[in-house]
Structures are given as C-alpha cells and as structure tokens.
Length: 181
Length: 181
Image 1: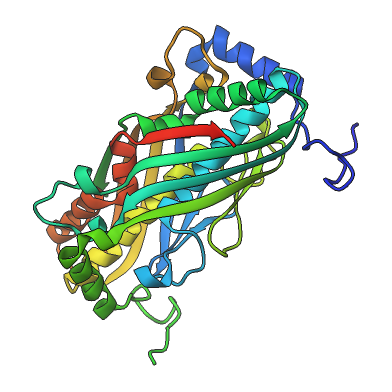
Image 2: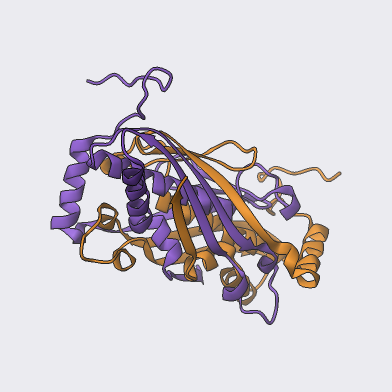
C-alpha cells in the first residue's frame, strides 16, 4: 500500500486511483445510461438565515448570511456556496484530466468571482427576476503547477470547464420547481 | 437585548432583525445599483478530489467525492453542494418573506432532488456537454409550519422560488469562463 506523504515532503498532490478512473471512463462510454442519477439533499432551518443541509450520512453543510444581509456570519452564503461548488467541480476535472494524461500536478488553486445583483432578493416589482436575480457571469482563473507545458495545462483547464457538471448547471437552463409539501 | 431561546423552549425559529429587513428592502428599491456586487472565492486542492474553498475569513468549505467516484467521502460532492446552496437560499427567502408578512414560522425543512448524468464528466466524445452535463431538473418540496393559512405558506414558497438568487442562477444561462493564470 502506498504511503501518503505530507505536502511538505511530496511535490505532488495526493493522487487518485488511476485504474479506477479508467474504469469509470469506460463505464461512462459503454453504458452512458448508468450515469443518470438523482442526487438528494435536505435543508433544515436552524434559525434566522442559518441552514443545515443533510446529504447522505455526511456532516451537514452549513450556509448562513453575512451581517449586512442579517445573518450570523457563521458560514458562506448561498451564492458564495455555488462558487465553492464550481471551484471544487473544476478542480476534480483538473485532477482527473491530468491523471488520464499522465501529468502530475503539485498545486491547484482557483480564483472565482461572480457578478450578482443582491438587491433583487427583496423583489423589485416590475423587473422580472430573470433580469436581475442570480449570477450573470462567473470568471475562473486557475493556477496549475505540474510536469506539463503551459499548453497542456491550458488544455486541462479548457476540458474541465467544458465538461464540468457544475459549470454546465450554471451555463445551461435548469428547470427548478418548488411545491409546498 | 433579546435572549435567544433554545428550540426546545420556543415554538418559533430564531427570528431575524425585522427592522433591518425593511431597511434592506428599501435600499434595494430606492438604490438598486447598490446591490450589484462581485462575490469571490478561492478553491485549493488538498489532494485527490478533496478541495477547500476559502470565502472571506470563514472556515473553508470542504467538498469531496464519494468512493464510487474515487473520492474519500469526507464531504458532499460539487453537485450535491449546489443543492445545499439552493436549499439554503430558498430557506432564507421563506424566512424573509414570512417576516415581512408578519408570519412566524416554527419549522422549515426542504427536500431537494436533482437529475444529473454523471457519465458525462468523463467526456462522451460526440455528444456536446450541454446535452449531458449538469443538472437538467431540480425539484424542491418545502415543509413549512407557521401561523398562516396553507395558501399564505404556498405564496411564500412561490415568491422565494421566483426571486431566489440561486434558483435564478440555475434557471438562467450564466456566462462561465475559465482561464489559466
């Protein structure tokens, strides 16, 4: 069994299971229907704007609001959490892509920024929400260090951006429907 | 100063600052430009598919993958994190809306499910990613308990759904661009 080295000793990030990656890619190509799943979550309000979301048997995800939006500032707010989801999704793509190309990455950090109009959360009357609410643009700047040319690293960034589930969730229209139970 | 009562004693959820809410709504209406902001985040890969996202000066958001997707299962995955963001965003809307209507809510829980094709993350070749990657539909079922009629509670759910920043981020096309630093 391979010993996991600390970042101080090893120049590479802790590697994923490359054989498992090949198997996943094969499964996705030979049996695409197997990838169609329904993900579930349950959000419970603790109080004020602080919410706990339960996913599988994991510790709850905490999301709050900052003080100027009347929150208790104990955790990122919902839209910031979307940026976190996008950053992590792209990073998974970089790692998987680099691994499949035989490239070892020693550092990944991603700066994300998203333009949003938060005045809209209060309901602006005559302006339809699709014109004012939610992110309009999200910019991602990826810092990658690894044993590859700049061109190869740029290809990894482009490929992950193109196929990232969260990037596509943002980019493409998703049907969101709410009902009272 | 108001004492915050524990949920065991008080039948209502810990209330928000209603005066602050009125001020925010006024500010949004009289000076909508003040609401245009750019949110920021920085994602750093720890190893494998485990990523830490730093937002303001808060503790990092941890996002991982489950074992069948080669992760270490220490936290929700990126798309599940999007569901958490949506749930929390809608809950903020329920609380704000109920407060502004003078309704006291004693319980909010939200079931979320999202349809996604994860086979697409590996790149399916000829199929363009917008056809296969990311959520296609997200369904929300809100359980609300409060001193209001079912009709009023349904109005709260509908209003939050319509104006939620995260719901609109999902519903409307967002321009996502990635560059290598």
